[in-house]
Structures are given as structure tokens and as C-alpha cells.
Image (cartoon, rainbow, N blue to C red; front, side, top):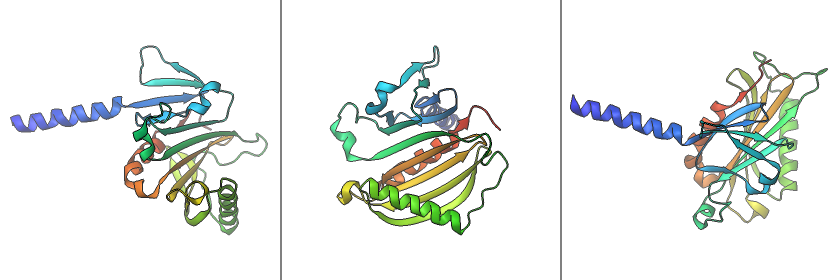
Length: 214
């Protein structure tokens, strides 16, 4: 009985530690998302971002910025910590306002992936890879999903690293729709580090919420 009680306490402490190691970011009061302590805001964007710690809630941060885009990276890069460069991870969150006269997918709507959509997405991925000097290696997947009630277009691909000289990278893209607005979550990491980042990215995606629900 004593051993069982100790095991229960250990699990509880582990869960508490995981919970406390996450930070809830609220962007311009439009959406919120949780990220672990292993990721940090990219320093290049800190000049345009007001990071406001919510009083009494050290694990919650309000971000105020005129930009539609925020980027997170593996912790330690801002401080130029040598060990941080042994891994690679980016989480890019981009917000878009949709036309009120031509709203896109809302809650309970179904996204249909047809040939035209597949060609359009594949073409945009190819173009982005060319512009960023990270040649596309293989388009992996495209499918409709639902995240917290919001319709999502998910697609993933494999590309070369920067200028084709770095190790191959896996990119997972989630376009999340909320009728009059949408967010694109882009997760990228080295293919060799897939297992290290997979569960982290899954948890980030599951935590996403729009403030208003249409």
C-alpha cells in the first residue's frame, strides 16, 4: 500500500512539473497557445513585441504586437548558448483576417481536399522552398482535421536544410479556420530529431484556442 501511495505521489509531482513548465501565450487577445520551457520567443521579433506577464500568474504571458507573426525557437539561441545549436526547432504562428463578405470555414464545417486544393498547396510549398533556398524533397501528407472544434487543413513535407547544406527538415503545417479569421501553425524540426519534438508539437497544437468562436 505504501509503495502504491509513493508511486501515485511521484506521478502527481511529475504531472505538476510538466504543467508548470508550460507557458500560456495570449496574442493580441485573439488566440492563445501553450508552449513548453524548451522553446523561447525569437529575439529578432522582441523589438516589436510587448511581453506582459499577467500579475499573479507567472505561467501566463500576454503578447501585444502589430505583426501578424510570432516565432518560437529552441531555448538558448537568444543567449547564444552553444548547446542550443545542437538541435533545430521552429514554431511559427501567423494570424490572418478573412473577408467578412467571403468567410471561410467555421466551426462544424468540413474541409474537402480535392485535386485542385492538393495542387494549390503543393505549388505554394514548392515556391516557398525555392524562395527560402531549402529545396523540397518530398510532399508527405495532406488531410482535413478538427482541433478543439475548429476545422483544420493539415499538410506536411520534407525539405533540405538551409541552402541545401543542413540536415533534412520535416515541416508540419496546420491552417486553423474560425470563419472570419485563421491561423497557420508551422512546425519544423530536423528529421533526425522527430521523436524529440513530436509529442511537444502535438501538445502545442491541442492547446490552441481562438478567443472568439464563430
